[in-house]
Image (cartoon, rainbow, N blue to C red; front, side):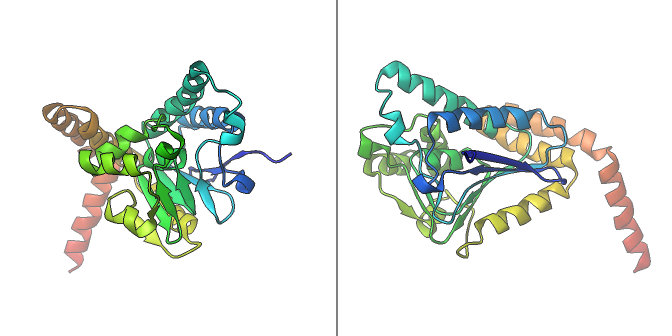
Length: 257
């Protein structure tokens, strides 16, 4: 029996999480949701982690959200609260990882799939990909935190329109709205995400973590508090070996001219 979620950790500290149910467009059943939460909790503890990539198995889907065939067997409000708590908590943990998280959107990212993508720091989409908050078509709303992340990315009026019409977006439309960083050639989403992750992994890890910390502070804290966090992050990096070495190399290059 194949695993519905795969975790691979490369020697350079890059973790790859793959939704592995291509026969159902990588929709998540309860077991996969629980496994996803376990995997995120596992990589949080990895001191050597440098970057994370999320993608979907096959070439048709990143993740098409919850598997309604299975989830329909759990119709009570208590059931609904249980599985949105599992995924909501996991995505919050993913979002607050100290290292960048990249979504390689290799196909459909609908409903909960878009919610997962928006919990990532960077999103690279296959030119054939479709994103969309389609929950309203099933008389639902986002439940994994996607509504708040959508609001943060596109603003109130655009978020309202997207949630109310439930229309899937092309990769190009998603990029125009700021939901996607880059649209890439068909079949290249994971390759581009991996190149970015490798670039991140080659940078001083404390600097990368500081960049994510200061930007997330701007989302969660007051302007003044976020400024203070940024200023507090700078001095240790100024005195740290990577910066001192970079300055030394800069001065050496000037001498050679």
